[in-house]
Length: 173
Image (cartoon, rainbow, N blue to C red; front, top):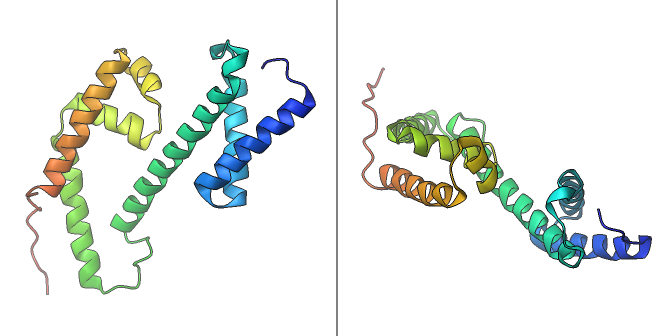
């Protein structure tokens, strides 16, 4: 990246690690986050031109990686709980059936969204693409990504939290 001496790099890495520990509250996760930040910065060093803004740019990368990881973790936990592999495996079978029915209702709600909304939610929320990356992937302006994504999240929230119509389920004895 820029011509920083070893002392400047060490200081910068210490600051990034301190921020990462504050965010993750775990040294191992913080170290992984700092490493991912440096890897991302090195792979995209052509995007950062101003040596004065290097520190702010690195903190931005670290924070966005942290948020993306949290989003991904929440999504994976939800999917695992839907399919009975979450922390609630030991609960009664009746509860698992209810969870599966609710998961099916959520998936049906997702399927009712427009193609553009589903694509954006999948790219950003599931695949972890940034807004800019999603805009490039879909060939639309970043502002359009943000407004469509906001509307998609609102529509999905309304479909799942409003009065969702759970699928008809027959009880077998």
